[in-house]
Image (tube, rainbow, N blue to C red; front, top):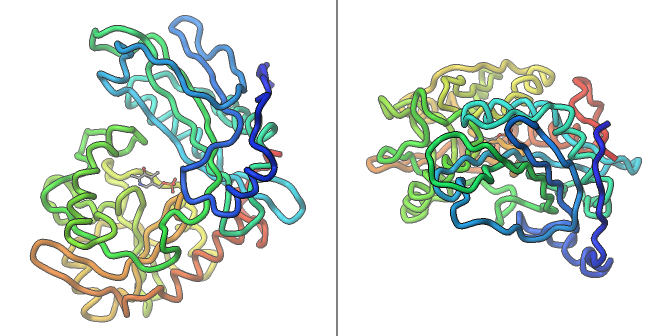
Length: 361
Ligand SMILES: *Cc1c(COP(=O)(O)O)cnc(C)c1O
């Protein structure tokens, strides 16, 4: 165990205020009473691990992140189980991905044990913020950015690692309802050799204009295509995609070509589908495959998956020259089955055969 110094918040939210927030948390709007901070300095490594009251940070105008953008993050959830224990889902996978993101952005790699312990330390003081309801959780947001002051362009010599926590309800305001998607042929999210595999803040900044375009076209979300041929399906917004071939009892997800983000939900569903007696396959899939598959009744459902929204059905596909419906445009049977099976493991209703859940409190 590392020596975390814990400073309790002397003015935490009252039980009434907290319960009102937990009643209707939304997503990413409210934060718990504490946060984790760990410094990194060249020559010293990760130092001063601490839990402190949640509060604003003071930033120098010449902070290197504000100018050159070294900033990465993770997202994972803690659920309260019936026996009162609090569990996170595959936190070591988040730690490993965080280290990979750090490496790509020339940032220091936080050891896996310190990453997981930091989560435990935060939950220990903010336990009361983990909702009981199955459709709710405590969303944990580890992140790290450069804190060195200066305008020279190079990897910074100082960083701050933080974890903040936010009670979460449904990610999409409408709940589990099929979303419509816009195939983005003008803008791309990631290119070979780029930063698409890293959970890097700048990827999101670059995606916003395409998301705005999708909204302008009447769609809920943007679907990213490969940067070169603009034909291969990559992801939907900040989520991975699955295509359900109902008659073949098979689900297909785009393979990790180097420009997709390797989702932990995506990886879990590859296994879960097998557990449920389905084939799960990673391969390249084109816009034409998607359209033809739907027209011929082979693709019966499509869904997106990620930590925040878990599993979200896709009902309608639009692009500059086309529009088609997936299945009946409703939430499909297999989509619902996979969502339930995953949530059952995360919330402790079903047996956790793969030891995915980790007790943090
Ligand atoms: C985080 C993220 C995902 C989903 O990853 P999970 O580990 O399943 O939450 C998918 N795509 C992008 C671009 C992401 O940033």
